[in-house]
Length: 474
Ligand code: ADP
Image (tube, rainbow, N blue to C red; front, side):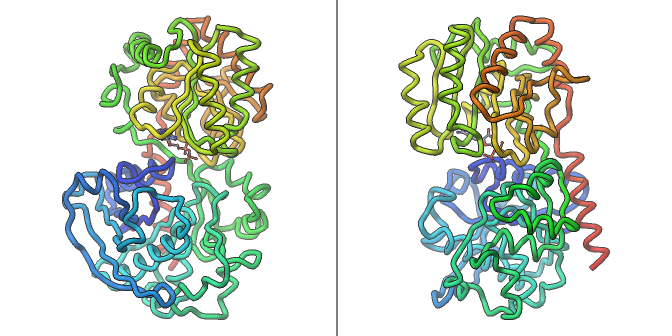
């Protein structure tokens, strides 16, 4: 199969969260089973761009409304990532340092998508399927089907994968003239509640819609930031395919970002050596269980309750536990987590920011990883943690529910709780302290979780089945 993934992120080129990890790994696994998957994303001004060689693949132009824009498609010269990587350069619009967060993000991502479709339309290579990821590529299925200029692509199947339905890319109807001329009878395929909603449009127009876990798909019919009815209506073409992890990048035996590599044969010593590094650097007590949180400090991750939950744990368990936080997000949460460092020195620390290396070191050196998420479409952190022998403490939601079995259940190896609340976190921390004290149980849980294969092998093949079915039924 010839597959083109369109995304805003792809590790190690540009990553803000799980989307980057998925798009950096899935195509590689798809290629390893005999396909030809390629990836295209915007050309941000990243380190990867500066450090690698590029060749110009195509030059074209688009009109964003009345604005004439040149675009250039460049290709990474060596395919070193295990797939062909293309970047779309649109001068002054895409070549910025950050991926998201600009006031003209609507214009940036609309122009990106138009350039991608224009490029495919002219290209000698025609994909068997165009696989869109999240709302940043959500207008593509509509454009391929209903823009007159791209009629040659209307037969090419499209798949949408929803990594996070909270963000939908809403734009007012006053921006509808950005898109190339389209069949006006089809305006309903762009609209949701009187705005242009790229995610809703992709759910309507794509031939197949996948979510990154089975439970998340169920949850979206109940709560989907306004799209619940649409998920119910379109349920016939939706299915859940669980994310996997890239076992080459996330391997404690070879991970170059760790202070000490280890495997299931020397887990105890290996983890202790990594924990020592963390405890020294962040002034924590190596003899006490180390619970870490890594992620965006936003409501979805229940980061707002972390300060109260951590305070309540220190109140109830005194010095019996350490916490280390790595994340960035809402300013008031950053501020509160940051100021607590002085209050609880010696048993608590926080790094506010994004730090890939430190995150690897934390997965390796921690005893427990806390994920109290209110919404978790799949969650990768818990799978990384398990591969590094770190016990996941997760709220039973979305993909967390699909990937973590509580230690109290048959074959269980993790700690699960039901509510994103201070009390549930506090109770779970109590359980973690007990597990930590029982070294035999802890090492048995570590052994068990490190044996689990969460790699992309199975899910990559599931996507191929989806594409094949679409190709045959076109
Ligand atoms: P999200 O909803 O943010 O996409 P996921 O669990 O799917 O959540 O993926 C999160 C990914 O981002 C993981 O690889 C995690 O290690 C990484 N990550 C999140 N925040 C940070 C941070 N502050 N520093 C380093 N890595 C981070």
